[in-house]
Length: 110
Image 1 (cartoon, rainbow, N blue to C red):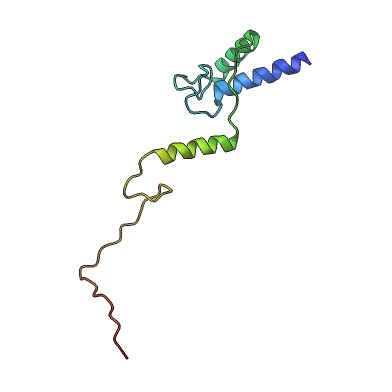
Image 2: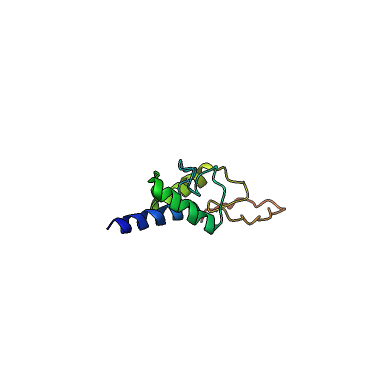
């Protein structure tokens, strides 16, 4: 039972070191999502995960997929859009303006 706990903890540390938790700017310095984190090779991540498991270090929680999507949407919504982009970020087609003015349509009496 204890081995299973340790294995689960190790896998959590290894996952944070290689993929991160999904939060932008995570507080955990040993998490790939942290702003100051420098990526490490998997062999180094394995060694660090073992050391973190032995120290019983604090670990950040994984962000659920839906929470991550909401956080990314909020970030995207807060960034200013360029004038030539549609709301989903794709390029907007430029429609040429007609050279002649269109006269307004008038209704005549019968």
